[in-house]
Image (cartoon, rainbow, N blue to C red; front, top):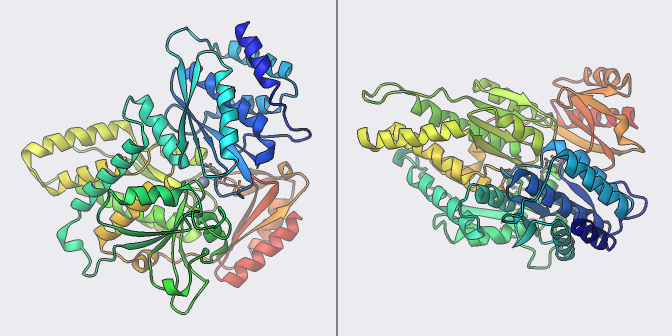
Length: 550
Ligand code: 16G
Ligand code: ZN
């Protein structure tokens, strides 16, 4: 009863917005910030219940990533640091859309009963809160806190302004009873980075190493965090632009999403940057894409997208695994047939998929959205996933990590400094550098930098791994995006009837043509993707498919 009156009291101060239906979507709720007070309050309640249910620490992040600064959003990190269990999404939708406090309370009590959730009166459970740099973040954080504390037995801990992956990392760490402060995060990234740098073979170092990196921080949280991290690295010279401190607007003409979709330089980059190694983060620093400005250009770029980051990682990991499995030295017993797999979406450039298959790798396609890719990658001993837009990471199975640790200790005594021991050490360091909870632009960037130095490669050499097929992305505003239903990892539209046949017959007219449509998970649009052997052809194909959708 105490619980009921607490909820009634509190929730009546957070009436839901009139006439909008909210949905948890691909990556949490997102909308204009002014519409979100009630939703964020209710997600606070959900986070507290999730925490009671799992007896673990849960995360609640307030961000709208690469979207406009006037938007905001909210999402939950589960105990392992990953995305909220999909089984709870319908409950999130129901909570967000409950019309009155009474409806809300009824939904909660039904759910609590069904899921058998109770507070045993012991130590209260914790929800960690984070937010990006959006001005609306502060008041939304207060709403979330009220939601959390309207559930008896839950407490809110404000971790401050963070990148999304930092918050996921903290939840993961705290549930493993490890240090989970920002300081611990920086310490783990920088020490594993230094370890990997120390393990770079002498011979492979390039004659003129280029330690200079120019970063576009999207006027968000990532650039500022990187400036802190850089001080602990002492071997990279990082110039951060678009930190948000020099008047620029979050995600406006800057950031990974802009650079990847428009294929042009972000603001404050231009012809002075010809030949430099550049990287763009998104607003909450869970995505990264590299680029360089070709000679003679001031706006056009050579994009090195998520697919190429994936390819670089796959190449490096595969090499380390094969060193590890060389069976020549005596007294070195046992090998581990680590299954390496890569996961992409339909947006992956066709040339990247061909390249990965040529490397002999198992390539899996999933629908768009980190939760789908992550889940698949977790089925491997080493699973690498990336979306073309730059979100991805490398997951290591617990059993493989245990084996590596044991191997490392064992090798330490029989053949200190052997190639196999170095490979084991490198893989262990990679597992610490790259965020195991979710894609992380900071960890990803440091791993790219290490691998380029390890191979002695410039960004141009890297970009030449394969040549991207020209592609075009368009979007079509529609009344009802749910009219389009897809299958086979979004490569086929099964509804409305006949539409796939129409797309197929357009696509057949193009050499190396490929095209698909899908309803966006974050906006009221249908997205169109087309690929063909020339840019002009890709554009034409995208345009004709758009006409079919319209
Ligand atoms: C979200 C997803 C991202 C996906 C994008 C697609 C997460 C953390 N983020 O930003 O992975 O690529 O949505 O947006 O899952 P769309 O459905 O509007 O094309
Ligand atoms: Zn993001």
